[in-house]
Amino acid sequence: MSANTYKELLREIEEYCHALKRVPPRLIAVSKFEPLEALQVLYEAGCRDFAESRVQEALLKKAALPTDIRWHLIGHLQSNKVNKAVGAFSLIHSVHNHELLAQIASKKLHQPVLLQVNTSGESSKQGLTVTEWEKYPYPEGVVVRGLSTIAPSTSDTTEIRSCFKKLKEAANNAGLPELSMGMSNDWKIALEEGATFLRIGRHLFNKI
Image 1: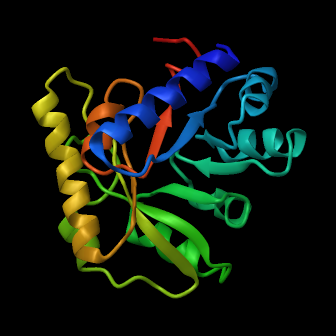
Image 2: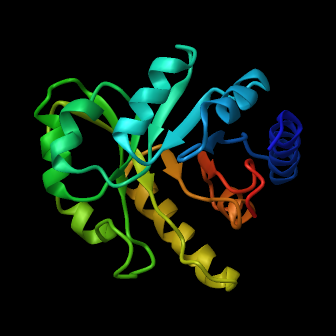
Image 3: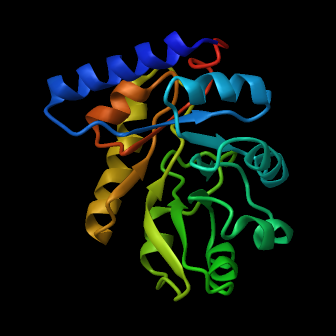
C-alpha cells in the first residue's frame, strides 16, 4: 500500500469517467482491519473517505485521526450498536431491514443512510429485495440518501451488471440520488451503471 496506489487509482477512475462522460464518484477506502499508519498514508495522499465494518473499530480510528475525515459504516449494524453508530458516521451504507431503519430513525438525529438491497438473491447477503423496500414508507428522523448493494463473487460480468442495473433502476424509481456499489474487482462495471460511491479495499491496500 502506498500513496501512489491511491493517486493512480483516482486518476484511472477520473479518466474512465471522462470517457463515459459522467461525473466521478466518491472513492471510499475500505480500511477495516487496517492499522492507523496505513490510513494516515492515504489521508496524506488526499483521501478523506474511509469505510469500516465494525462500529467500535471505527470509533477508535476516528478518535485518533484528523477530524475532517468522512467515516462510512459498511458492515452489519447490530441493534445494540445503533446508539453508538448514529451520529458518528457521515453515511451508513448497510441498513438491511425495516426494523433497523426504524431504530435509527427513533434517535431523531437525521442520520444519512443507504438502504441495502439484495440484488443477487443470494442467501449469504443481507438486505431486502427492491419490492420489500418499495412497500415500506421511510420513517421521520432518518435521511435516506440512496441504495447500496454487493454484487456476487463471480467472473460473470453479465450477472454483476444485472445486479447494478437493478439497483440503479430502483434508485431512479424512488428518486434517490446515491448508489453505493462496486469494489476492487467490479468498479468499472459499477461506474458504467451509475455508481456514486465506490468501496475499494483490496486494491488500495495491495491485497489482490
